[in-house]
Image (cartoon, rainbow, N blue to C red):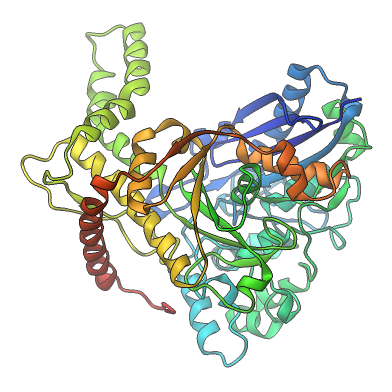
Length: 561
């Protein structure tokens, strides 16, 4: 008899579920739900870097997608043995004493500060600076040392500190805070004991300065010095954390009935999308997995013997078991990857959106057809023409920091820049410059890992950019000077979550064995082109010169090198 598991992957714009046959790894069905409130940019203000999401988008999406894969696959709900949820992060949510998000309660339904604070929200820059300054100078343990030595405004404590200083009502009403992956897991399990709930090792270690060497979260004394609220909050959080091959609980009767499953179905401890994506792509030692979407997360695993007590500067953390239990998981990434190209598309689309599509000459049907045609061909045409531009031509130099810099050396105050423009610069030249920029930013990450003694032999790309843009992937191979394989699955993070679920359900003995059967195959491989490597090295040098100039002109309150 076949058994099945479900991986649920919460991305920036949508949630998707994948149902796997554990016998052979076949993806029997998938389902996607686009967040309706987020699509309307409710609770967001891009000009102030505020990006919030309503928990109802996620709760409704959970029900819709899981019911969708059950209906499409026609499997017996009783044969679904496990579910695991991955999400973006750090994306904390304020909750009441019973774990209900404040946004679902009267008085908070339209309050942006009561929503989930999305990973890309950068409103907490000042609070991150305070954390870095205190960690460096307070005289006690430097709690950022396993976070790359620099705490980011994208992460747990900085975001909470910002919200509670801005909104007294949320501060006084929130009993505690939960990472998105923990909240969604807690929401559907039977054991509604918030104190004993198993929190994600991945989320806590990479974003909340949790580490076993100092007994869990930063000390109450340290947090009190940041804000007394944070010191008090520590006692309402957790000490222990758990890897995602463990069971968080069984599916509650309410959710089992709602989804057409049974209470025998276990729910694994939650995780982050990039880490589960690496598992879905069959990550191994000395292989860097690049999860390439709106931003990137770069994941690598290392044996404890290799990494020992060394700390890697300027990354997003190194955590025992955050990817594969028994190995140290290391994370880096770029705050904007696809987002940088999407920005250019938005800029270039202004005359179309505001003039052509508002024209009184065209019918509504013609406008819709034209809009669809442009949407379909926009990036493809730019890519084709950019690829034809010789590297010997005068190409602009751009920085990829349009949403700040995540790694190496987090600094969300940095801005993007473009130089070497001329009257001969056209849209494809700028597009090529931006593609080069995101690849050069990737090279900075690889170089930092290798400088710190973490060996990288090959790269795996997953996500929409990896699968849809041979131009970007070939450029990346040339810049990194390493072979890059592309995972075949469209749903690598959901696939990885399903792998965790299969281990939690007892179907496989461990994550490595499960990934051999359930992990994604590869559909393409890119190799460096020897004739172009030296030309990209010259462009990379120009990128570094511009980076140094912009970095030196940015007024930063704290940076720990």
